[in-house]
Length: 376
Image 1 (cartoon, rainbow, N blue to C red):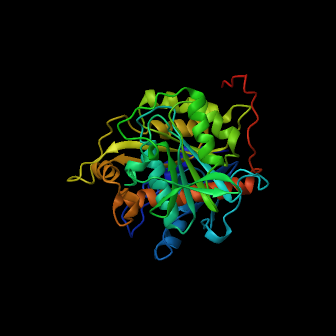
Image 2: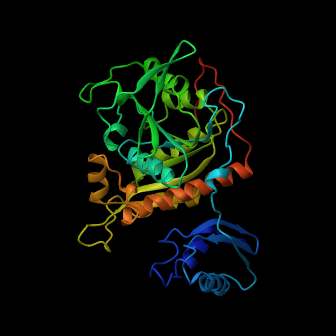
Image 3: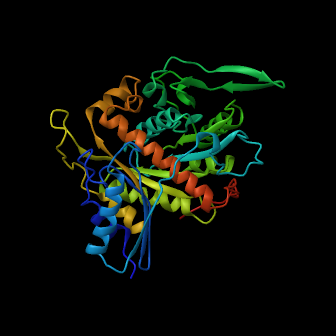
């Protein structure tokens, strides 16, 4: 008999790590979970210094056999570790566009206002803190927010000549290279551009910029499924995508459209996971309390139904908003609970990208007839 991932996670949620006092699911410690007929395999991602790892592994096997079936063979694999020097290519390496970029990750959402840019910025910083070379493209032309979140609103990219051609030099801050339309317009100015102008700007940021060598190139996409999204997948081979959403039902409906877009026959970009933002509200003075303002586990349930991993759940915490407004994202400080949450999420995404590269062919640019529409 094959048990569902949800059933296995429910069992494993009963097991606590004695060192932290939290259960394995809250710690996001269960990775690479696979269920087959009478076989379950997964890895447990806990610090190497944790003295209880072996006893936790034995407890997991015992509880699964007790709660589900004695006939189940349980395999606990060694956790995947990312060697920064050996990050694999998730795209064809013969591309003229972004030749030094190993992996291109699209951060998308069907709906606006779900915190996608906040997630993108904090993931970029957290990945850079692992020693990886990271780039970040703010592709939300009509609502650029990355310059403010990183405290570089007044920065202006330099232009250099390469073989007689003007090349944009990305702004560097907190160990990441970035470009945004926000660097070229005043914060109070509205961009009243037709779609062709917006896509032209994005193409220029990709093709006429000196990104150099990068392990991860994150693209903060605008909400929805429109011109910018098609421009991105046509301009470069996107390695994978993650979908950000709140648990709210209206946001989930839009997240579903985002999934359909990437899975469309003409696009076929692998989705490595969901990220549930604003999962609950936790007051600073009551850090153990959780108030489910937008509903509970909405994206978690959708992830289970669609067989897409839920990479993490990020709560609403005042410090995240304040840090973004001040240009000092919470992921800079890994000693705080929110900083640790984003850094753990980044490591999980790095693992998922490596697994994707090991199991799937490298991606290629999407070829779409410019006069045709693509629906899903």
